[in-house]
Image (tube, rainbow, N blue to C red; front, top):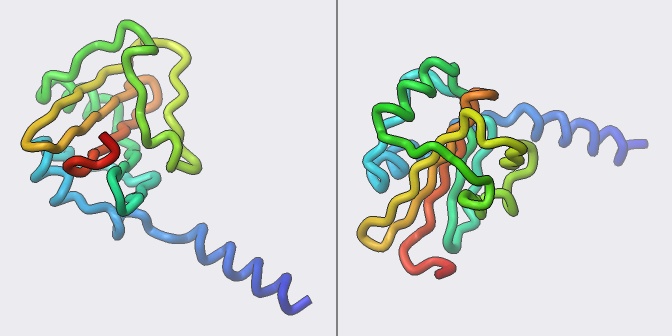
Length: 137
């Protein structure tokens, strides 16, 4: 019985974690040159400590639309054109697009860093991932 209570307590504590504390906003902005909007919520984040870091955000749809325009995101026309490696590491917010409607992305490489951002205006979700230099490539 004591183990069950310990498990329940541990599970409750883990579910209350604030992921925004582990999100390295300064790193993302410095590497990509993309400044995040003022209001966002970190839904999930990870860093595999080898070659990839990724974060999923909830952003108001109007704010996200302005964000994609300001940073010249491209319109997604074919679902096969965008593949996020983050999907293998994310637990609760995996990208699972069924349509290209209102999906925008930007993919860049600079100084051995590669990054991809995908914005889903239907759900107000933004995925961001950065590949570390020489990582996994």
